[in-house]
Amino acid sequence: MSDGLPALREALSREDILRNYEQIHRVLAEGSFVLSVYEGHLDGDHVSFYDLFRIANRKIVEHWDTVDPVPPRSEWVNDNGKF
Image 1 (tube, rainbow, N blue to C red):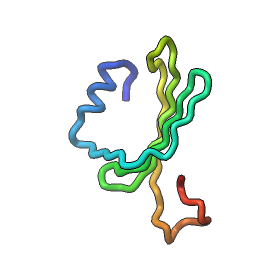
Image 2: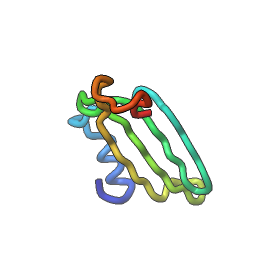
Image 3: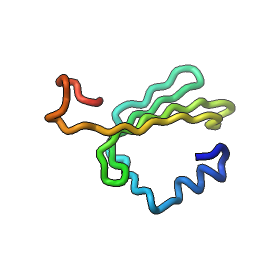
């Protein structure tokens, strides 16, 4: 996605990408940074969403994110899971 508000609006309005945020696992804040951790589906795949925001003057001025697959329980290497 490109920088700027118009690019964000366009990305959020796309109907060809099916995203479903189902459960909030964590929201952490320190100083000017906020991290949100969600679980959901993206185009039918079970995924985790991590979004990191930098806030200045009560506005989001920077944003980074990652989307990672959540493996089936049978493939977990420990009992902790993704979250």
